[in-house]
Length: 110
Image (cartoon, rainbow, N blue to C red; front, side, top):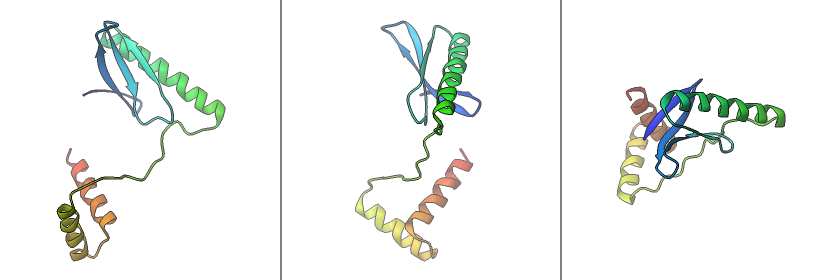
């Protein structure tokens, strides 16, 4: 997946063969915002325009532009869950604390 970043916002970039253009979709917004361009410069400019319009609409409506979800549901095999629970207990943490720390550590090294 190709990612383009602008002012801390990230967009997933894909090629649309039907339109013979690149399509960007701004991620983690409280709604949808996409944009198109024929080349990287045009794509960046359209990203900027699309984001500005989206942020202005959010401001007018008094809503947050980004999702504020702190829940994360994950289905894992029972044996893996047991291993995580044992490790968390050994470190005197609950499963949520333990998994959050491990994910944070991985992302710091990414």
